[in-house]
Length: 106
Image (cartoon, rainbow, N blue to C red; front, side, top):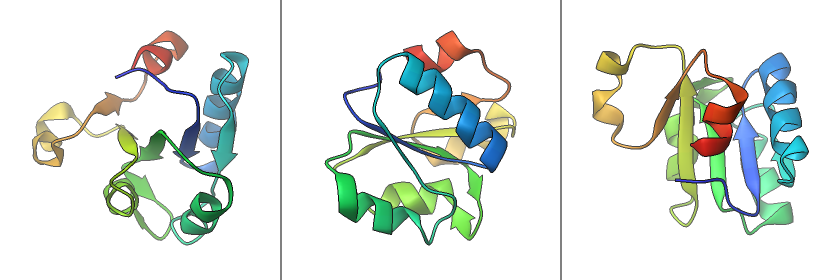
């Protein structure tokens, strides 16, 4: 899976800003949400979205919950949990820590 025209990401503040800068520097437009409650409002305003980048655990819920809200969008979860704990997720997962090029190639 490669990043498409528009990306959406959700994680904690510092990581959100850093990942956003990586994606902007690579030429991807970004829409940002701080928590699970804010994300649907952002989705409604700027779509269409082609990728949702979310941490597995987000304020107010989980990244899997967020990905399930819109099946037209590809989801990429990021997490610090080990791969063996993530088998049941079924979708693409990027394990922390990761390098900028790993994010852009995901």
